[in-house]
Length: 234
Image (cartoon, rainbow, N blue to C red):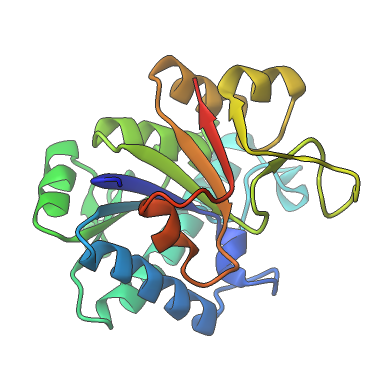
């Protein structure tokens, strides 16, 4: 169904419930799913978070300068990107990490045209270090990169199978949305993505699908048009 997608994976998801670090078994399983999608003919770009190592807005950073804390968070995403790249390339598929912060020995610098060329050649591209700027989350980076590379859809893989009226882990009466608009997310104050990312998608009419990555094969199903999770449109 989709020719080119951008997949957003949170750092917490890569920890697979352990809270800190990278779960090797889980990251290998996710890599295999991503490779299956790429081999089916879909061009795949990925943005990874860094919350499994450090979050600039977390309690551990509350006494730090915000810019310094955000820079630490960006570097955390590079660790995750390199780990995911390693897992993907073990399957025999080429993968490139492109960083918004220059670190030539570890990753390529982010250049839009080069990223698009990698995708056209069938390589998986992982965007690391967010936007390279403090005060912007990796959700915002995902929205920005999706539009820069001309992705058909932004896929956000989470631990929850869609958007709910409240946190389903805390409120058993929470109801799931099958579809929702970006404006409704902002008005209802739903914390599925930060407001900057939501507004960016809304202004550029970029559809987004929130779905669970806990069930094996879900990434492939979403890419091929199965109705999973919650569809967000303008």
